Image (cartoon, rainbow, N blue to C red):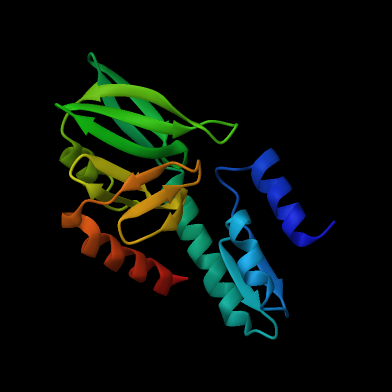
Amino acid sequence: MNGIYLGNKIRNDFFKETIKIVYISSFEKYGLDLFQVRPFNFLIKPFEYSKIEKTIQTIIKITTKQNQPFEYNVKGEKHKVDLYKILYFISNARKITIITLNADNTESVYDTFYGKISDVGDQLIKSDFFYIHKSYLINYHNVAIFQYKEITLITGKKLKISQAYRTKVRKMRNKKMGEQ
């Protein structure tokens, strides 16, 4: 069993939402093959131990943020959903729908509540959610591919980035890439 097969097995069969996989190899050519596994990082041997330390610190920081619940009200009752389960929020006429990831790597409607998506964005300001449109708030950790005009989620769904948000998304992505 090779590392790519094992990474896919771990990601798809056991811990798809929360696991952070880091590959270490002396072969740079494996970097592109790892894309399907969505590793957190790929370190090339020989490496400095400070790179491992920085990677672990970043994983701890991200995991702590992702394990926080998002709280909202439906008909006066408080509800919670873990952030790592959320793919994105979509707003339509003051109705906000939470779209989550299923165990079979598909998406489903988790819940709908009334409010403003800007209030949701304010609540998640310290989390890794970002706007691609005035009505879409996306979980960064569930994006598989960033392109100029669209993103592709880990479910394979493509969402358009509105022209007004393209520069902001690109800057955010570049900043995130610099952290890792």
